[in-house]
Structures are given as C-alpha cells and as structure tokens.
Image (cartoon, rainbow, N blue to C red; front, top):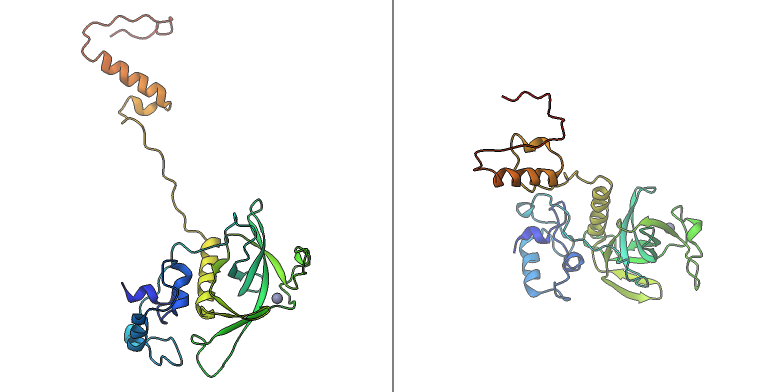
Length: 256
Ligand SMILES: [Zn+2]
C-alpha cells in the first residue's frame, strides 16, 4: 500500500474514504480504522482541511484505471455522475436520465451544489445537491424526455464522458449530501474529459509476417504465395537436376 493510492490527482490532498471508493469497488463501505491514523499523521489540520503537511505532498498522478462510466446496458439505472460541460467550461454534478446505446449518448439532469459551511476549506466541506431549476445549460429538446416528470435542466452528453459515483445520502425529496468531495469529483471529470478529447496516439500493432522473409520473398505481398514459394524451396532444396516447363513467357530469358 502506498500513500499515492489515497491522494487527489495533484498529490496535495488526502482523499476522503468515499473518494477512494469511487474507483475501488472492493474498498469497504465504512472507513477502516487505519485510515484515521493516516489522517492524523499526514494532514496539516485534519478538522478543517484534507491538505497534506508539506513533507507528505506527492507528485501528480494519472487517472485511476478503470473509471466507472454509465453502464449503457442498464437502461433504467439513474447513476450519479460528474461530467465536464465544454460550453460552460465547468464540471457539473448530475443524474443520468436517458441512455441511448445506439447514439452513445446520455441525457444528464443538472443538479446544483452548494456547501454547508464556509468556515472550513473546500476540500473538507460537505456538498449538498438539488435539481437545477433551469440555467443556460438547459437544452429544451430534453425537457419532456421523461414521461412522468419534466426535467428542468438537462442536456445531452457522449456516454463515455461522465464519471459515475454512487455515494450519496438522501436528506429529503430531491435533496442529497454527496459523500465524496466536490474537489476530487471535479478533478476526475475534468481530467477524464481532457483524456477523451485528446487521446494519446497509440500506434496500431501490425500483424507480424507469418514467416520470416528473405531477399526473394520480401517482395511478394501475398502471404499465401510467399508460403508456396518457401515450401517449394524446401521441397527441392537437395535436388540436383531441375527440368522446367513454361508457358513460353521465359523464352527470351538468357539461360546461363
Ligand atoms: Zn442547470
């Protein structure tokens, strides 16, 4: 186990246990005791912030792999997601409402978030969410997509852009507390979006030639012809006298 498993992507904050559980399904539901020992040892002011003492800062790290994205085979599951909206240039919190496996897209209802106490650091705060009553992110096309209830603020996203998380505690109808930190959710969604929008080029792996080539066979593109020639060559490797019958096309070739 390494401390870097439990840091935010920039290596400056210790994850909450709920943050760690976003990408590690095997992690226990409740926070283990040893985690609070790590907190006491590494945090600068553990009652107000998740920031590390300077000597515990680590370098920034890549996105955890695999990240969970909406499961398009489970049409009725309304996952909680965090997703980067390129129009607003901001990460939003929302719930998936419609999945189209055919178009690889999801309709996400926008939920507004705010914090319950502003005297402590944003990395420590609890985030409360409620459905957005309507803002400039709303796309009218998706208002009536749900037969039972209109969506006041929703838009379409590619299905591989949102990152799922499911740790929420219900306070009232349409009012929840997010257990993960907003700070970490935003980091995940933004970095994931950047990676999807600018994928690193991975060279395709070319199939290896079935048989090694040599000076003669390297000029023959057909693998089948190359194999035929190679097998003829091995069949006649010890022949001392060869007699050729041609269709006449070799008539003008020199014989020596
Ligand atoms: Zn909105």
